Length: 163
Figure 1 (tube, helix red, strand yellow):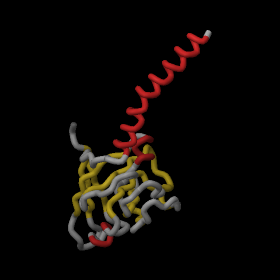
Figure 2 (figure 1 turned 90 degrees about the vertical axis):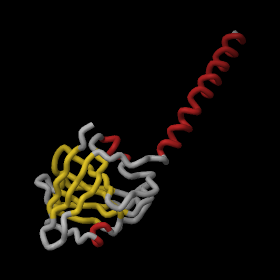
Figure 3 (figure 1 turned 180 degrees about the vertical axis):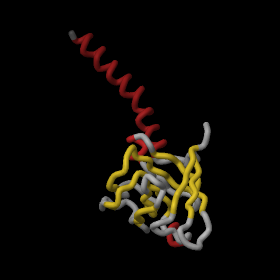
Figure 4 (figure 1 turned 60 degrees about the vertical axis):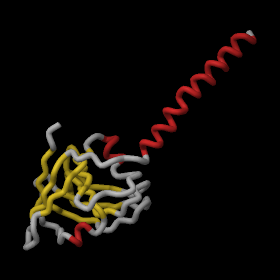
């Protein structure tokens, strides 16, 4: 009986040390997330400003949407993350574990910008809400909308890069 108990404890310790590096490694990866250029987006003006091109990373799966830009330390000026929802809906976001201040651009199914949330507060758990139905949300660096004269009514087109 003592032999069995010792064997079980030994197996448990071996398994613990085998899986501990995997857990520590996943945390390290979690905090070193590089931008993945998966598509291109263009914002077409409704007034006099020029068209604007943005490299985008796509968030389509639930896990990608939940992760979003959390744990990122920086993002280039003309980069962003496009959230693609299966249908138009009211949107609720927060900035938990998001270190970069962001502008959120809410986009209808037809590509029209319908709402903006500018200069969000990093690490905030306060809800960012858009009650205007949207199918897409583009996250870009804070100040992007102001610097580039992005307004409600501008149109957006995007394409996925071929793999």
